[in-house]
Image 1 (cartoon, rainbow, N blue to C red):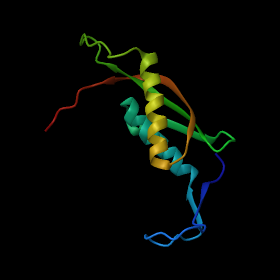
Image 2: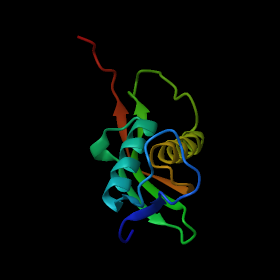
Image 3: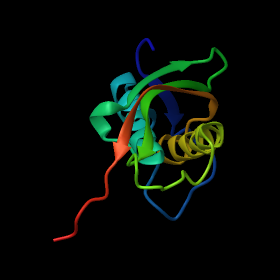
Image 4: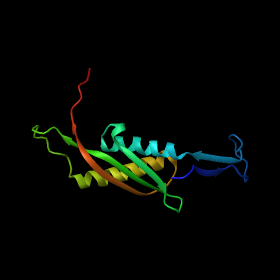
Length: 129
């Protein structure tokens, strides 16, 4: 993605009881969008932050296109645990979650999310201390 994304603020119109609007732009830099997408994807896919990769671009109409590459989390082999849902359903659910969370956090519309599972990692239960 080239450059930052800008949204106009301020402007005129009716007076409001809150703080007076100030003319200018609010920008969300491309690095911030990428890191936000990476954090949201790692949470949605239950993988470590460092293992999720994200690319964010403008689709040409003001909305974002997000590409996520991350490992597929699988249960410990031999544990007889069956995944809650098929891989395709996991990807579909994660795409919807990622799009909604990015929209909520950044205020930008997400037009497309592509999830690619590049490898797999074992979901080991963590002990509580």
